[in-house]
Length: 356
Image (tube, rainbow, N blue to C red; front, side, top):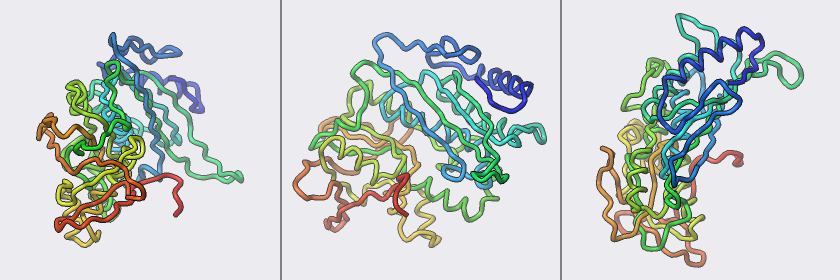
């Protein structure tokens, strides 16, 4: 990995440490990894290449005082893996570019912030079978625009390369009127846990490893589920729930030129979201499930007559509505209540550069 840390000895040591650790994350389609100007990937015969990139920026996607470094590393990779899952692809290799203030590379009590970040990232890489194949590092600037000293921020960009059988990639644009709409797992848990972290960050400081019950700190990208469904040619369209169900379903509707009706009673709500409502933190657990985001579940559509298993790879799959033809000024997404009344569902999830 190319380095831009200030001292040459520090650069070389950091290169050697990352290269040594990355060598333990095998699998994928890696032929040549860290150590040369480029990595070499070998996709399976008859496959197409898919590429995604995702930026994790301190104070936007994570906070050092809220998120353990292991969680930051895990989430950095999970975001990209979730994109690959949405395409029905298998990972071949990951490329990490990271900018850090110098203090995050200093070891205290045996490990630096960077060491622990890599612990989280490489643990998920091992689980997903994706090698860390290369990347870049830089030192974060410590000078403000007018020359005053400031604390440098951490930033990590992950690039993931995957493969999918030719013509089998899952797209947002394939939904058809009459399709049923499905989602995996439960929704709203990530947003609910983030609320809890904001209230009592000290309670989450010990969350250092992947474990159930932490949908925000350690989300589980649905690579295996998507791969199985894609190989069976059961899905017409798919997307991952990263910005919120209301926003991500709107992306499918827009790209496919269709509309959607979803049933409020059918939305699978995470227990943490239900608890947030009981505790009075939010007015509605359903609101968290519809708009919270960062659940990294798989949202997809399939023909009405196709049999979709209720569980895939030990994860529940829920039918939540149907795709309908787009008509005139009719809302692109309609939410149907238990009594049959319908309301327009506006996109309420995360969007960068939106007016505040």
